[in-house]
Image (cartoon, rainbow over all chains, first blue to last red; front, side):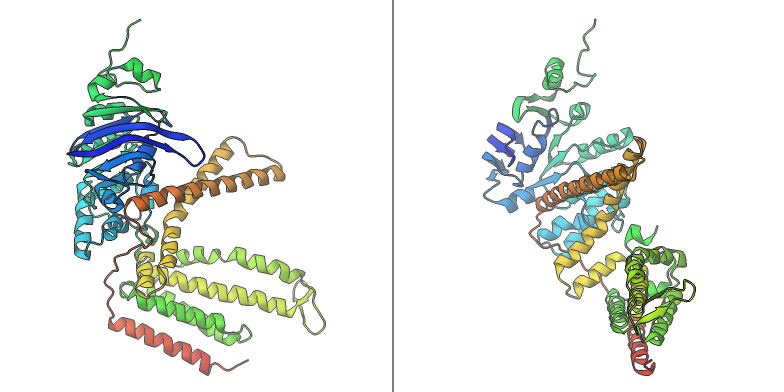
Length: 243
Length: 259
């Protein structure tokens, strides 16, 4: 089954800037897809289409249902993790934040409490329920941000720049955490060596258009192509040209 | 960990006080504030009694004095803002008051107004601080919700509590950035820089609000923020507190003679 199927999607912001131009994309269920491209390529805008926060021209289907036709379905299916955890974590305590989505789904109190504990345990911050997000480290905030969508049993996780701002150990722990999650993952990032570790396929986006889509090794091996779009392939795949 | 980090009762607070039902402490604080604010400032003996009552509460609950002093300091700008016009207001015949040391005469009504703002403000700040210290902000929010305070109001308070620190950090970063590039010497230029910073802080907050809104909608927000209510339970101590406060307030209002 296809987790995400996007056909000819275009989106223009109210100020007239065209963020997406005819993007088509397929992500199979259970797979991990890397979404790479320079700043302003349209990665975040594309993510916001996955559960109908933005809706452009073209079709977006999630688990074989059009997003626009059933927003509840899309929001249950797709867990969006925003780049800045201070945007994602808006409630006064970690518990309230992780419980926010489940409560909106109308689940009974006991199930909500169980889901919150399980999600926090899954990201390695069990027992953080009564902490205030403001006083967590950036790594802890990122983990809690992921827990907020895990608690909703989302089958698709869309993560925007999940490793930004983390130190190397934090980044390593995050990669291992993401690797362990079973959901379909779409990861928008500049961190191509993380893409190499986690993603089976990659799509390169530039100025709102898909430049290339394919197997991770195949795409990341083309360093000249990556360089021309402001990216740099990871050293372990790219043969560095000799003088 | 302090109360501001967990949203629970302040560390070191008397344990029985920390277990009081949040709804009861909230209602008691509200009743006390309403009574003292509604009392005319001329009835000063009642204010002595109010102050005594709140002092007993603070001592009984073992709220750290340093922590309270910081909160009391928040009143200073308001008192100053009222004090300035008071000393500029012209004293009229029959309404003038000779200040003992300064030797100037000021309007009696204006001085009373200043005293009213300072005393009532300070009593209110102390009451709310005592409430936050024993109950904690989180439980207070939940108590507000279970007492059927409009959800929008509770949500606003909760957002304010969550983001005031984020905003303060952002402002501090901007000020560091300004200082590291040299602080302008002239007051006018400094004021202009401060104005630009305030504007940019506003725009950043506005943009953040938009992103937070998206994050909320992404997780199924439909206009209602749902909080799971904590299990509050009425105990004997709660009844003692409520009964004691009602009796004390009644005694102050009925027994303290009018001046």
